[in-house]
Length: 420
Image (tube, rainbow, N blue to C red; front, top):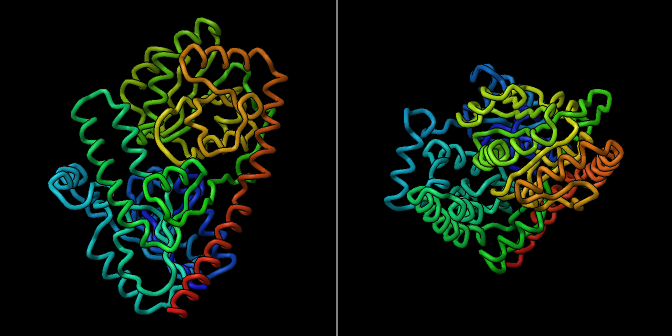
């Protein structure tokens, strides 16, 4: 089959943020079985963070992706090329039309390029890798069309509104969530298949768009890249890894630093905390400056050494949607985890077996201290987590599921057109 993979980011390298890891591995698995044509928008900050220079990074990404894709093209994002471009677009979005989350990737250059590809290549499947790309659906009248929901965007935005204490920001998030919900109701039925990352998100999407066709293709982890290294463990070390530009990560670490860490330090004075991820907020950096045992490292090219050194992975994320690939990375690395239940939504972990759940600050303190005091329990949870990652979340198995869904979707679409 000819498959067009239309992406909101350049899916390279595989060590990037969770959504990038998912796209990279699924594109690679698809390309083992079918001809994949890749068109991707360039989120410049992600490229620079991961690869340094933008132009050199894109050249490296293109060279790598062309090893298994038939064709690779990158597109700029106009709002990123102007000073205050995103802020101005957000203001214009309030005045009508699509919400900001949909408008930011709409460009005439992309429409012309896609129209040319559509007329020149007979695509069996056109895959839109996020809701923000859905307006381009009308450019393709032939072939099946699939839409990936890394999160259910309206549900995530409305939950963010409920948790936002500042009134004007709360109002902005609420109106964005309401408009996203209307957009999902309008656009999702136009696709032959909607893809979610978990059963939780499937339920959320069906609640928003009853009767829409949905299948789950879960997030995964590269189990050969993320592996245990027991010899590196420091028994009084904690870790969290996640890009701080994503608001649930930043909010989680501020909650931990301000409401959990002081009590935890009173229980275990020699404890060390390592927070890894680009764009840490000023409040978090200020805490690190005043406390030598609370380390904020910012972006690092390889998170594995920090995972290997930790005795416990903490994940107090209580917002956002989809599934958190950082949890899968920790499981594959054999790290016992203390997490808020929201952080584990859509992942088949069992409380007490693969993870210890905590909601309130005192629960986080009690669960972390209990694990630090029990090396045997840490070893057992590490074993259980690695086994779960291997059996359920390897990208090869997940890629095979996606291939089967695309093949089924294409066959059904062809059959429907033939009988019409």
